[in-house]
Length: 115
Length: 115
Image (tube, rainbow over the protein chains, first blue to last red):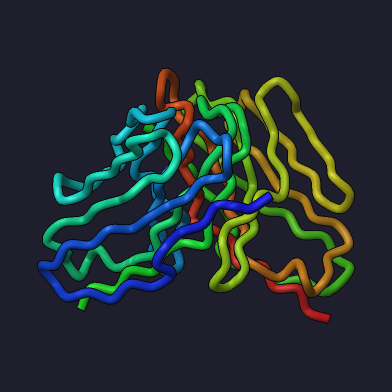
């Protein structure tokens, strides 16, 4: 079946603007994760959803970052007042059960560039 | 929180040789250790994983070993091929409760296999 998809694939914005990044998980996967990957680094955890609720948002860097998953499927990562330091590839992953016991499948990422 | 250290940062081998990448983790409660391969500009893809109730797992040319006492795990690739060239990331899951869903990644190893 279809894998995890993310849109847009690339997003260029100006400092101070608001952006939304979308993730479509694998159908039927209850858990959804957002990570951020800077050049030459490993993915860095941001937030993890179990169903509609955020089970762990300890990785969100500050209150400019927010994510939702209102129907337990598609998720949107929202970044307010973007800063140049927010530039990175934002990766979404999903897994069937979650709770750290099953494989996380990654999407292709959204490359965010803040000018 | 969990901390994962990965070595070496770069590894260069001749085709047919073996490659070994090592990771250490800090939290003794972690119980799931996946390895991902990431080609340039592509999404991370799971190549093998191990859970803490086993010490070794093998899948064709790839094997992973886990030493829970020492809190380290290693990836072994035998009979390397040029198409094995990529960045490899180790990861460990979170410390318990809802954080079990969260993966902490190592810094990555750039593997180059020369024909």
